[in-house]
Image (cartoon, rainbow, N blue to C red):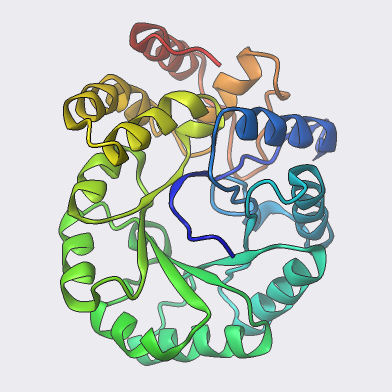
Length: 293
């Protein structure tokens, strides 16, 4: 699998009249690849994975893999609150042709660090694929400690971590302790540039669903050594990144896509469609930043 770096959008899952909208999903894949993204991440938080049936989960991954046609890697979400269910989804993703797995820390049941380590080892022993661990304690209620990550360094399938603690110091701690053993990817668009400055290699991005070129421009400028340009591009997008979380993700980013005609205005319960005030504020923020889907 190619080295994971650059911009990898965390794909939304388009719905229409309650069902998966596969044509809209395939069109999204084409727009993102044309926009210069380095990979695709279906069935994560932004993809409303917890609201998908297992059959829909498999169908989303298969559609993304088929549409991507090997042009960029597909890193499929397979993490759940259950190790056995995660293994099932990981095997399903592998059968669908995914290039790698995104494995979020188990949510709600709050395992110990020993439980987290055993969980990831069990999944990757049963379904060996390159894996990105996903640490987002604000959603899961558990934090993957740097010491635990160090103990997992002997698992060859683990190639990267999506760092979404919201604290850029965690990136610094990981890189200081483990060097380049794991690629660090920002899990928060608003922290992409600070993570890159510390040695991270890219971002798993919400905003890139609608504005792939603008998000890719930040990383490309940084990689080219144009720090002033990267900073300017990042700061221009900063209000947009913040607007994507005015209400629960992926409501705001789907509102942007729906306004542009790229998907129906639908999320699945228990999420609700963003309020008119939020939709208007998101649109105004994007217009002020000079970006439109």
